[in-house]
Length: 233
Image (cartoon, rainbow, N blue to C red; front, top):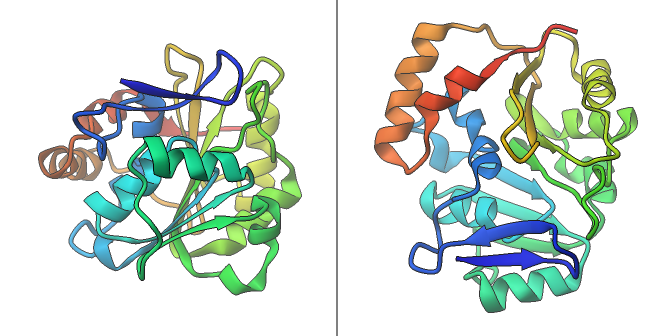
């Protein structure tokens, strides 16, 4: 295993050297839960965006495993260089773009509004004490990025963070009926799904979809349904 640290003991990402394009951290796997409500036969036609590169696990998985057009936004140039040098992140291509930019700035641009099908938000500094961007205005811009059937997944973590406050802000941006959330992982990460268009909770249909996901890719999607539920604020 290889781990990414930003000068502190906090793990910012990981990679199994023998399987560089797999996702191994539990919370990062859960960031892929938008697949539960996606036409899996058409996923290669969709647009993915990551706000925060981390160790590039999500970026590589979306780009290489799912065949999606993928854009990652990262503020720290050293993280991009480290991912290319040590975490098998490919160079930019027609379907992969890694932008050195501020996620808040990208989210506010009309250029991307209405174009992202899967938005994955994992924004932390080296101390990982709380999300770097967590305002109602930021989540409102994230909502605008999404296509009509798009989904945002967010990692909420940190000793100075407030899960309830963050979800209240998301609910104001997306609507109270638009949120699903996992129970926290053993490490304390809570993954929240926010939909541009609220989705019905159909346990049978979700189980069938989860079984298909698990067959096609190395993701524990069936177990997700034991930990995931609509949010009632």
